[in-house]
Length: 131
Image 1: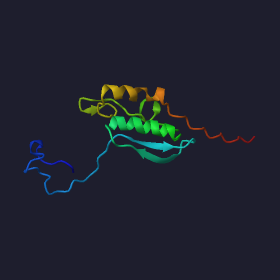
Image 2 (image 1 turned 30 degrees about the vertical axis):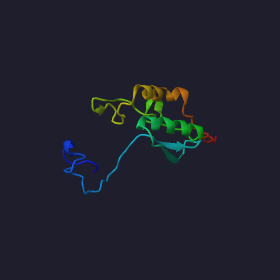
Image 3 (image 1 turned 60 degrees about the horizontal axis):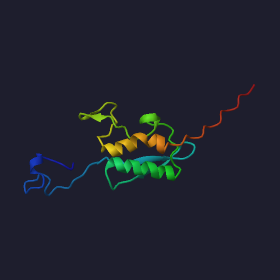
Image 4 (image 1 turned 30 degrees about the horizontal axis):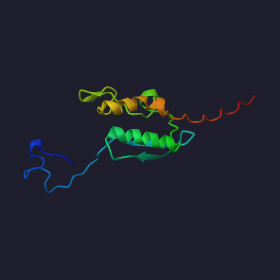
């Protein structure tokens, strides 16, 4: 847990976290799976240093440059693993949405599949049919 108690006490002498060790999981954007040309998962890439949205864009472009972007399927737009920007009024319509980014970064994310399209994995050859 990183936060506890009322927000008005954060950073004061009465901060409920004083003397406690924060713990738990903090999830943030900027992480993408890496796929080889056959669509096999071979690792992951995480970028952190800016907003979660900007980190996502940087990770996407780096994965493309590394030629490890053969995404076989995803929950995002175009069946990719692009950020889902449907988080409105405190909820995501599909359950996987990301909170609002700046309009400029959202425009970049929405065009990633056009400007930096993921590569299509090679299809495995169909088995030969025997007569």
